[in-house]
Image (cartoon, protein in one colour):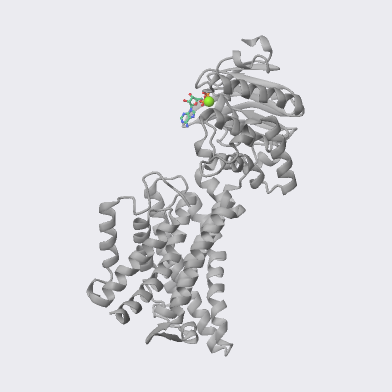
Length: 299
Length: 224
Ligand SMILES: Nc1ncnc2c1ncn2[C@@H]1O[C@H](COP(=O)(O)OP(=O)(O)O)[C@@H](O)[C@H]1O
Ligand SMILES: [Mg+2]
């Protein structure tokens, strides 16, 4: 029984880690900018494409394969630094304070543009590049084998969770963001450059999503449709955890990934709908999510 | 001459709220702006702070045009503002609320401490509230905190929007005393205080202006 359950738990937690990277960025941007970015999942798939391409290039250039680890981080940073400010300044900024329907239409348009761009640049094939996972290998505890890379994903997700808490509670940027979330007008009057706060928060959100995508390539590869698939999972997490709740996103990521992995193990036909069945069940009982209330908007 | 408002017109949702108002705030002087509810006092202060779009007119600080600058550029120029509805950050402690402008402007720690000590000396009630969450203080205490927060940057101009509105008598007395100390100690600041009734501020006013349906009249004390 245990030797069956442990791999399942590891799979679920590793999947949860990847979803968490996307969901936490979605929730951050929702808290600070008050917009629900439908295109957020595209940053995940773009991060994945860039990381996979960079990994393939590293190998073909005959460089040290361990460089593929910093390459994962570098890919995410690149995507964030280029797309974060660009997208926020041109499109997203224009939607602040507008009706939700407009925000969804604009960000959905952005999603379509980014999807087409990915097809144009990376083609329609799937790319596999699992050097980092192969390098880390497996370890055996009590007769059960684990992928060390999965452990790394879980550790990194925990680092992001605690890093975000630290950012919000103890750094200047974090405190300024809390003030902007609470009261934009007073923040301006007290001297906070809220535009800059918006760019930084958005770019951080893009970075986290792209990092999730980059880290996912060694385990799942990249193929067209990854962005959309990730986006709906991140939305399920946001709905279950309550939008704007970082700890909520962590717990909800585990629930969503758990449902998915359980289905993969025991009822493969349901693996895509399982997370949403759980989401519906949660929303029937708590319409604002497990940790959300109708009025809270926190980060 | 410090802050000059010239022919300011503001529309909110297509309705003209300020109809070409002009006045000057002098350093060391307290200008009281009196007007009924809905007369345009809050709109005047928010327009000076750059918090709403202006149709026409100018606002300048020592000759420097303010309306071309983004709203967040007011605090670094030494303009402090206490909104009528206090607007404290509920998640912050009282001290953190007071220090928010210092954090926004990235003041050096020594400077931050000097200003905080100075603020606590002027408004001793704040020191006892210090660690309380911003969301837990009473409305009247909140007005004191908002005053302290504005003082962190108000080297040149201090704008107080209806500070006495809704204040219990004891707190109103405390607030008035704090204002007197402030005026005595900080003689370079140009003060503007709005109020709906003239009685409360007659003792601190150097100049009294009246605003009615978006138009300012008066200019001298006997206006009302
Ligand atoms: N956000 C708003 N939307 C619509 N009308 C507003 C808004 N804010 C102010 N007004 C109108 O502008 C006028 C002036 O308001 P305000 O400046 O708040 O007056 P005061 O501060 O003197 O009570 C009022 O007639 C008010 O109805
Ligand atoms: Mg008012």
